[in-house]
Amino acid sequence: MWDETGGVTLQFLGRREIAGLDVGSQLRAEGMVGEADGSLTILNPSYEIII
Image (cartoon, rainbow, N blue to C red; front, top):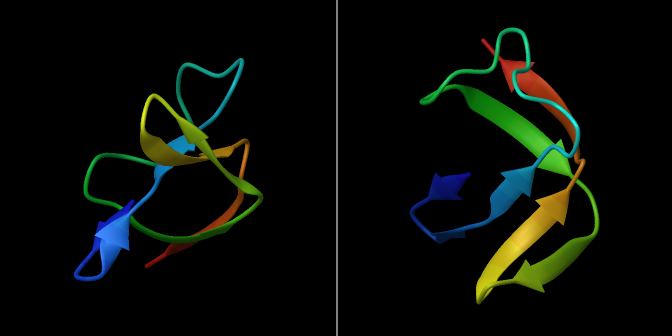
């Protein structure tokens, strides 16, 4: 997830696809932010797709 201020990787463990979520989708996500491989990451975030 990226915007003009920076970005964070959303990682959904155990899921290959999420219905309605495609590259370029706009969404709001929240969760505990950590670091993985030098990038900010949220594991299994709560999210809402913004239409």
